[in-house]
Image (cartoon, rainbow over all chains, first blue to last red; front, side, top):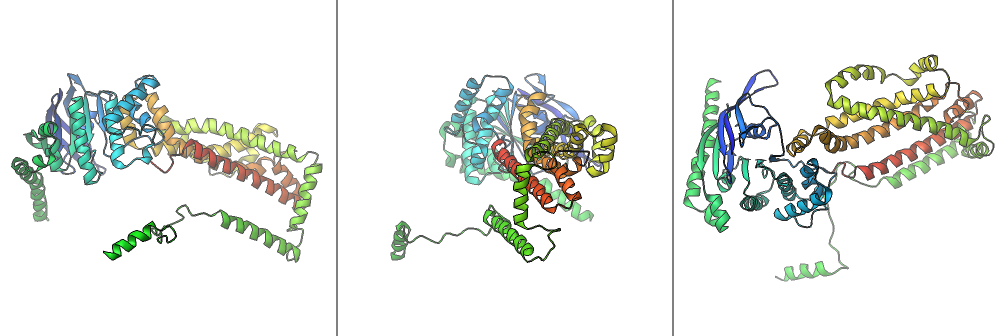
Length: 267
Length: 283
């Protein structure tokens, strides 16, 4: 279990002001669940992910993974970034096996494991290609395979499909569900798309900016239904999907509108 | 319907190819410049020939191409100032390449360290920023006073000239490293050394190679200054000595030889870049 307890983050802005990026966020990520953090930009969702990954220390609060406090980045938490961070000088197989290389695993074993993972993400036969020869969606598949290679306890995904076109994005969402159903990994996923959050999350936390905090939580079962029945249309057209969409939409948009109106009145 | 059928048959007819179009490019966009450069070179040669042929400039200032060619053969056969042409060339090449090896083996590690470590940057920034804009001719007298008139002062002068661009480019290479790439490696369990070896060094390599290319170029342009120091061998020495006797044709031979070597080296570095960093500009 990954536990985030009362996590707060204060940044210092360039002009010396203190920015309250994350305000007492608490979160549990259980085995076999996909927790999606949803919110507009500036709501602290990337800050939360960076803290879980160990890139950013907390100002207050704690994060523990299976009881161990999280202090620095490590191979027990695999990260998939929005911008792919593949090494341009390494082949796809070497990129996937990078974490195994850091762990000192011999080359032949690395290669076998890389090919296995490339099969999992639907990239058989691309082991010897180079990243610049791949499309955006394929690169993100490599990124997912790379994050899975070290067999992490949790996968952290920072708007991984945000830069993809909508068709590729749908394919990638289904691929992620396949990977999740087959590996049983815990996933913490960040997005600003309500539909993506509803489709992927077993739990959705809605976040709101200034200061970044969690304003609502939902337990969902659309992703389990998709994993069992594989019928996208039935899920997207379900009335409860549409209701939740509207509910979350008003949650995401309301605080913004209020803040803007207030500022306009003050001016 | 008939239109569709016609356009279908046109596409399948190889003799009637469709008009190929593409977006208007901006800048060079990979256009070939080789033939233009070659034509320019031939034009310059022709201009040189005509100017000297019609005596528009006195031969003392600008010898004819034939004179330079004859002089080149003469130097090749008999040598110049008591040494063969090969001895002059090899003396200069030895100085340049030993200086390049020293400058690279000091400049690359120090530049990387300065890009990564506060103390390295803090300590070495001031002396390097202070000395590197100085013209080598300005500190040449100091080299002679401190190190004498032997090979050492020449090589140290060239090393100093080459060191700064190599060191600064290695620093720039570290600075250009995207933080996401570092974070990705750390989240895959990289140790400090693994991070340096597999991420920092390859990321900085394109900039380092550019720095080496610039460094060697600076080396060639400092060569004549270095060989002002009581040299009896070297292309730079040959040019300076010939200028004392107003032997303009020998000066031209020397300049030509330096140009050929510098060009060959620059081309070799480009091949090395294509081999070592084929991903450059593609990531």
